[in-house]
Structures are given as structure tokens and as C-alpha cells.
Length: 246
Image (spheres, rainbow, N blue to C red):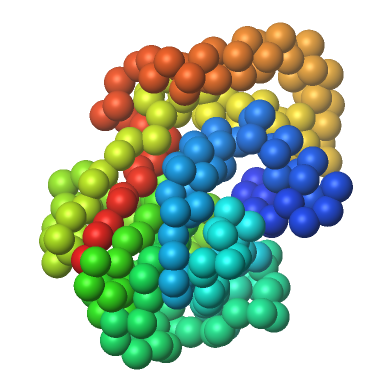
């Protein structure tokens, strides 16, 4: 199956244009918005050695306190297949973390586990390299289209997440958004997939989608209100955030 509407790579706000892209996309990309809301709460409090697993371009590194942390980023050798090219990271095979036991005080792992075929092996590796008392934040999608084809393997329920992270002393599972935000996200993707079609003949329908754009605007407003007030059912969220402690 060919991927016709690939996710936009998540890059850090290092320049004026980068800041426009990073913060501007959150108006429409509800997945990234809810992930950022959660990592922004956790990362400033991290101290010591911090490992970012599947880090891509390290988009959230800037949230860490540089004077209190030492950042390590790892990603697969073929990260370019996910539109990432970060020369400052340590490559790994996607399962075996190339560091010794009990090295890290904190772990970051955002939107990675769905791309890992042997997810329990990587979860166990996270446990191995974390210090006793270490903290971590993991995010995964729930309501998300099949993406980065064919390297998209799983969607995890809270029940499966409890099993995955059972070794940890605590694993708090938080839904990101509700069914209202999930439905809104689907509508937003529907519009942009048709406003920017991948096939030339579909451009004849673009004026129709432009005419329907008030629906898009209303959807975006409703989505942000639902996220602000936590409206809707949490059983069908955009994704989950797992706060772990060893």
C-alpha cells in the first residue's frame, strides 16, 4: 500500500521559520498539540542523564533544563525513511538500546512504540537502562491513520499498556483528548488530503473543498474547545501518554 498523505516531520523550533512550523501546526495537528502539552509538563523537571528514544530531530530537547540534564538521542539507522536526518544521535537497531544498565535518570519516547515490531523487547530495554527511581514519558497514538507505511504495526489499549509496563513501579496511563478531538482530527486530515491531492485529476475537486472550508474552521474551533474543557468520551482518544517510574 502506497502512502499518499505522509505525516509532516516534527522538527524543533530553532529558527523563526522553525517556530512558525512548530507552533503553527498545533492549530491543526491535534496529535502534536496534545503530545506537546504533556511533554511540556514533564520535561522541565527532568534531571541527570536523559535518553530520547526514536528521537528524530529531537523536537522536544529544548524543553529540558540544559544546566541540569545531559541529553542522549537514539534512532534507527534508517531514520531517513521517516524523513529524519539527525547526525547528533546514536544509531541503534530499534530494539537493543546501546547503553549500560541503570544509566539514565529520565526517558523520552514519543510516537515510537507503534513502529516497533518487538515492542516488549524495547520496553524491557527501557527498564534496563533506567536508574532506580528514574522517570519517563511515553506517548503513543490511538486514533491515527496507517502511517509511515509499512513501518506501522500496532495501536495499544490501556489494558495492553498495563501489561507492557508491568515491570515498572508505576505506569500512569493518560488519554490525550476525547472522541470529539479524534473525530475532528479525521475531518481535518480529510480536508487537507483533498485540498492538496496527490493525483493530478483530483485537483478539479479542490474548489468544492475550498467552498466547504467553513466546516473545517468550525471543526477546528470545536476541537480546541473540547481539548480545553475535556469534553467527550476518553475511551476513544487521539492517543495515550504513559508516565513511568522505575
